[in-house]
Image 1: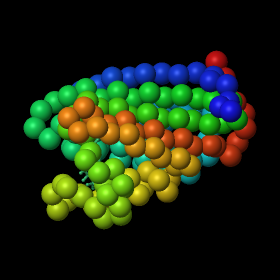
Image 2 (image 1 turned 90 degrees about the vertical axis):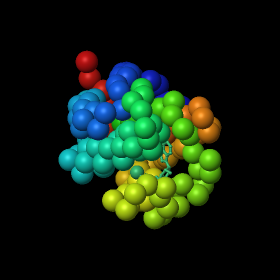
Image 3 (image 1 turned 60 degrees about the vertical axis):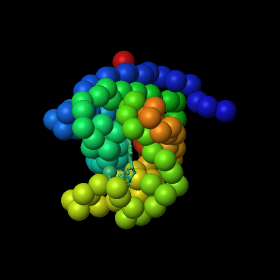
Length: 149
Ligand SMILES: Nc1ncnc2c1ncn2[C@@H]1O[C@H](COP(=O)(O)OP(=O)(O)O)[C@@H](O)[C@H]1O
Ligand SMILES: [Mg+2]
């Protein structure tokens, strides 16, 4: 059974690299309501950064497209982040999640999904070639203050 949804926010932005920092800061700002530790906040920022960078770099390799970030806060100090694009999609998600696997140039580490998986408590990737990709991540914060406002 899923806990009670306390609050949510949805932001859609274009796949410009400058929006990576914007998305990371927005997610951190929203997460702060659950009073996470600095380490937990850093984990969320890193995971969001990896997912949004993937949408910017891989989903729309030769054009600008839309990226939608959905943030949800649940009772019990749980945050869910969903990053959705309508780009090229991933032919084999299991392969894409393999550490060091990359279709990018040499500056890509191939560690994005591995980082998301290790910094968050849950990672789910749904993708369809030619339709796009949705990455859903969840993290439970150790402090249990619940959302305010
Ligand atoms: N949103 C996306 N759209 C299309 N392909 C993606 C997306 N996210 C990831 N991929 C694919 O999965 C691979 C692995 O991603 P990742 O682990 O972040 O490593 P890297 O970004 O360094 O290549 C990418 O190289 C790319 O082929
Ligand atoms: Mg990546």
